[in-house]
Length: 420
Image (cartoon, rainbow, N blue to C red; front, side):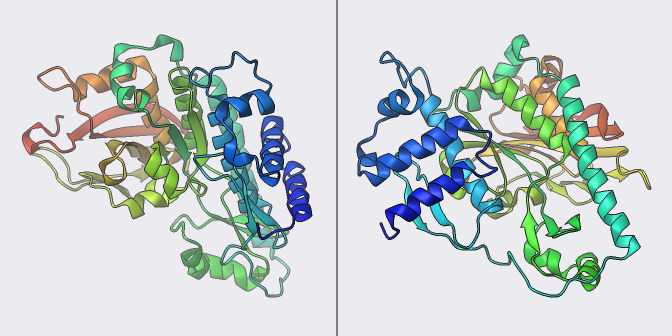
């Protein structure tokens, strides 16, 4: 196995006492159970039914075809393990993984991520930098508070499932693939002892270290023990994830939630994925090279194949000095997955309220009815793949009005592609 049994048991104990696992008794129990089965050589023979009985205390009448708890919790355990090694692991940790397709854990020496630490002497912060740190802390606090408020006040109407909602969600709900909701997470740089910094112009570790804003901070604070953090997201993206998960969970039992920095290519290949947030927060979308008619750019929406009467570009407008107010645009895209297999649903914009407003068009029966009416062809059906542009006005970070602008049908002749 390459690693001593005592070391493995010590690592499993560290995982179970970590912050990542402290609120997940079910995942601690499953991790310990699978670790012991792996060490005893029994994991290769484990079946879903056996895990349900022994790890989750299911009765002998338990039927994995009707109850997906084992598959669901195994998927979430993989996410928990990935989150631990992203946020809490040290260079002495042993890497514990749960490969897909079985219940046997793997153990190997962990590798520290490239660019995770740099060494230089930290200088005392100036008053200006303390103000910056305070502003960042306030922004994070606001995001958390706004998320809580939005979750409480904007409830998905899952009980009002309508024919239009069925038409929009059918390809994802009736697929044999699992469904993953991926929350786009921006890159923050952690300055130990001072707080977090984000350069909105980039979401790449190497680029952000070279940016003018970052270099200004490094000159004052130094770059000792700088590290990447993906612990925060926008209030709009977080609330959209709640709305979508709440709506879909009652219709599809194996809906999983993850962050873009934890989503791996195996999941993207094997599962249907809903991406929330701008493409720069979901770097996999850039690498996937998807064919699209319409794209989100840093300043607005670019219409790559404009039809008669359609604009080539829709610019976003944020009020000067008021980043929580403006009029922007969101893009809803449903496309084939990698190599044409499965489905992708992308909900994106440049401002956090965009994502929330666009998600509401997919969960609220009234909005869904209008969207389906816009998409419906002369034959009465809606296209399998499409892109829809939504205009969003927001105040105090809350979308107060959203309207349909135009849409394109993907893979259809130009004359049927959009309507105003």
